[in-house]
Length: 176
Image (cartoon, rainbow, N blue to C red):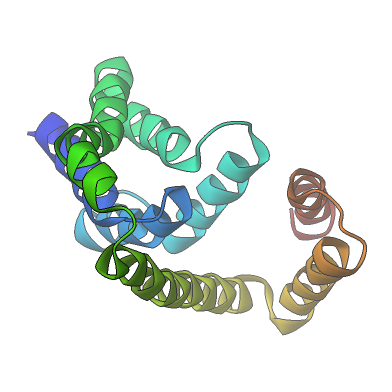
């Protein structure tokens, strides 16, 4: 039963997460935190932070970790397959159609309409993470990490990998 749940959680999140890995994160969070209760919001946010620090697609890294933690090596294999299966199936099914109609206004408008939905999903997830952080470590620590991270990313253009690693070190020293 757990293998079927692992498959469904990853398959549904990746099937509905049009737009790549970042679009699947809130959907995957819903599945593993709200639906199956395998992780808390805090654990999931740490998983996302560590996944972002590693090279490669975030969706497959999350799938591998979730599958392994819930079902061992077999669970990881099932989760990885489930995370790429929707893309594989849809690419094979729709590639010919999209190539035929790629220059039409309807296809161009479809991609323009999806972007705001992704932005809203990421915004909701960010609010959940900040709320959990605020409740867990307080407003001062949350503000320090948030403001410093924003400045490093936007003003000084530091790589997200270094910002995440710095936040992890900060948390280990001051919050651990």
